[in-house]
Image (cartoon, rainbow, N blue to C red; front, side, top):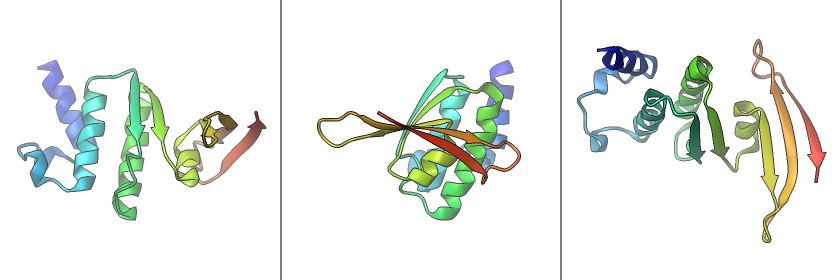
Length: 130
């Protein structure tokens, strides 16, 4: 019963409750991404790996899912490793961004992105050259 209550909360928070009886092939790409995020949050993972999670989504779905992810992240605060080629996305979703060079792969820069909780568009960052 406790797990079902928690599942209901996650489905409600991700707006998936009305799709709970659908099969994956019946969902759009945006809803599939939400299902993956909801699944990792349900298991209360300490670490979530996200590889180009928002790449194939349109701007509206991408923005909506990012907002949901950040809101849900605040509840359990799992560590998230986000792989992205979009610097703006990386800065807006992260505390720290690590940029890599081409082959041979090495750390090129580490960017500390301190996001203001009051104003997420006010991003302050410092670059540490390696």
